[in-house]
Amino acid sequence: EDPAQSLCAQSFESADHSFQFRRGGQAAVLGLLGLCFVAVLWGCSVPSFVIEVNGLGRILMEMGEEGSAYETYSVFNVIAAVSRQAKPTFLSFVGINTIAVIVVVCVLLAPLAQVVVLALMWAAPMPPTRLLTLMRTNEV
Image (cartoon, rainbow, N blue to C red; front, side, top):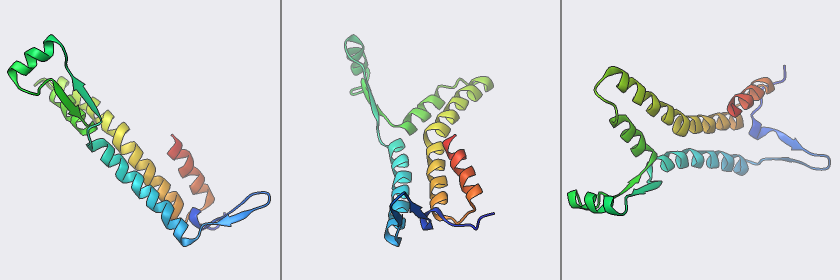
């Protein structure tokens, strides 16, 4: 089996060129991956869409509470709103919160896990077989 080596320390070759990342380039790639991690968290927490009611419905809503016809939502707000829809029965609670968990896994946890795996593939020394396994796993 080939010796363990981190991806950032490998030498990349083409037909007429060869290059290797210097320390600054290696750190820049890790910095970009860290930035991606932060961007996913930030993207889930900032308002990303608006629901606005117009027409007669808006007039009726504004009579009850001023500004209630216009609401902004983030991914976290949507997950909380979905969870609040559960009725006080066990099956409703399980069903609605299963949907909320699926949203959290697909929108938040899967992208964060991908960034972590990419960072491990970049920085951690590992044999080529493990690197290939992680690469295939990350693509699923």
